[in-house]
Image 1 (cartoon, rainbow, N blue to C red):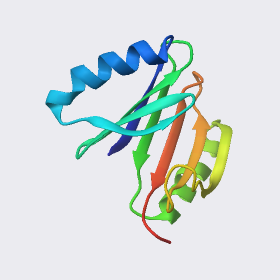
Image 2 (image 1 turned 60 degrees about the vertical axis):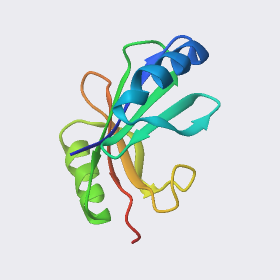
Image 3 (image 1 turned 120 degrees about the horizontal axis):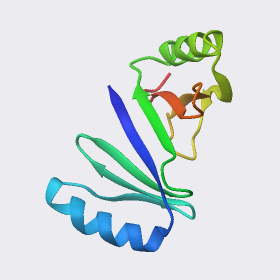
Image 4 (image 1 turned 45 degrees about the vertical axis):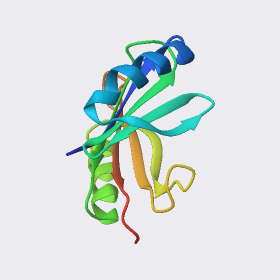
Length: 118
């Protein structure tokens, strides 16, 4: 299951205005903001817009346990993935955010994340 999706945007303020209006009828609202991006959330998942070159994709897959995040990372690395962040807590995103990041063969940032406590 996909936890969230990030897309690159060239003008963060302009894109925020657009997505805030366009996604409101779908139940999304601004959930979290950082200098480099905005997260729109709903009961179905999150969409991040990130200040970067358009067309960069980040896929995050939900894991039910932290051990599954570890297994994802090990399997991805064994399949010629490139490290982009070993498994670990990332409390800057959420107090229980445990994730691992790898680049796939095309350079896409792929993640597994568990938000459950331990």
